[in-house]
Length: 177
Image (cartoon, rainbow, N blue to C red; front, side):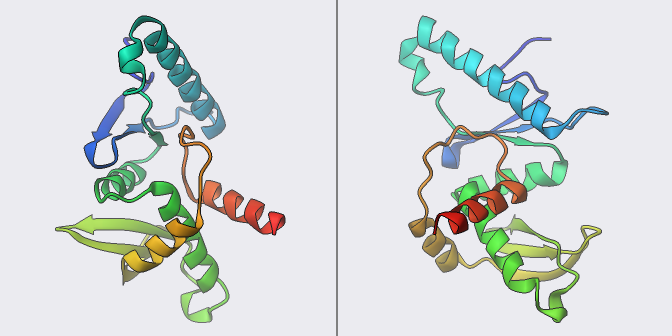
């Protein structure tokens, strides 16, 4: 089939953050690492073509592209970016909140958080192991801004920004300090 920016089926442009979100469910037996590598290869190929044949557009094509593999991830990523949130900061915020709750018996069922934005109302939904909502927390912009102020990212080309990525960033940061 034809390729448009990346070789996967659904591509959403989020003007608020000048970013693109790709929804591409994994095929049977396909690993997330393989999908991400293929997507990164497609992006590198696209950037090389623009740099060579349309250099004036090359800079405009240098926007974040995120990979999502489920409809829920797609909804969350587009909602967060549309709200003007850096998804990297959001994932780290969710990981820190999860760490805060992990030793509290009242929150033993919480396994993850999901950003939600409905009618301009932002929240973090606490999900159990079956992905059911067990609690709803109003989104804390002050906490988000505080975390954002403490972070710097060297590269915005990473396509898979999720809980595993956030935990790796936190572990790397802890090891460095």
